[in-house]
Length: 377
Ligand code: PLP
Image (cartoon, rainbow, N blue to C red; front, side, top):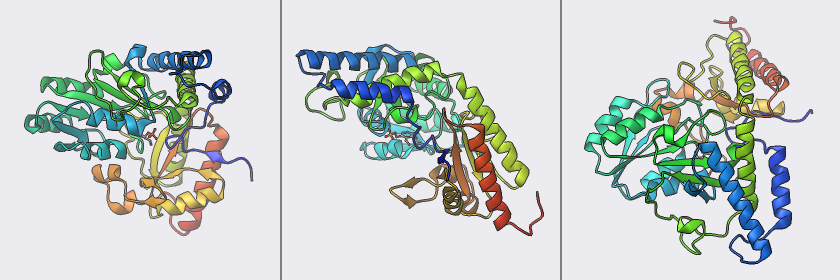
């Protein structure tokens, strides 16, 4: 078999070569950034550089960046440590936001989405009328399953009118669409290294200057007390490099979008019963959440895997368990249709040949299972 065709960048991006080099160099140097000796000071310099690189990606000052163990921890800190008396989250948030919100011990309100998977702003305003004050609103910048981009700027304006704080999970959006922290009007933003070509196990919560955020993890007082624990030097250095490369490589998203659009055009040519979720809304350039009508997601994922093609089931899958996607449920998609969705997500290493390989295998599976049906019926 040829090399695997990896089309699952939203699960984790392929680590960029420049990141591997930077990580290898940092690991070779080693050191604890809190140590006062030379090796410790050199490690501190590397962490400081990475902080500048990550800050540049979000257009903030380095002091606004707190390194965490990843997006999950950053989301938990944002939701549980901002001092909010209630939380208003969208129904399509990542499990780390939903889980973090319900663990916070304050009332949680859920903002519905429309059929394209975009938050309903009028409902947000209504929820904020009843929510205990100060509320914190958390709406992701782009959804991990559908790629649908959320109107976070407008969310922030409505939140401010109600004296609410604003958090956005920008884990999937970072590197794929341009954004500036100030422009979004948020108090808190979450990032994760491994979605932009860094390593898993590193992320950041970014906060507005002057914002009061408590630590989620206490101990040695690293990260100026915002996040204790010896810094993950390799992960943080890799994150910094990935952030730098994300900015440098930004224009490549155009090419990725062309490939994604071509893929969607071709699957639609196989059957006009194929549904592409969120296609009517603004979406990330790399993501396609599409159905093969009447064929279970897992059947498609397994058949594609046998052909060396890696994609995800549209249903959220964690620890090997497949459960109905809460995102598609929130979009009011019927269970059988939701159960036939797969997520194809491209990235910096994706090629036309990868897309062709996907289309050939997906097309063969479709013909095998739907033989006898009229094409485009
Ligand atoms: N938020 C979103 C939107 C994600 O897609 C993910 C990962 O899938 C996370 C948060 C969690 O990030 P991490 O894997 O770094 O914990």
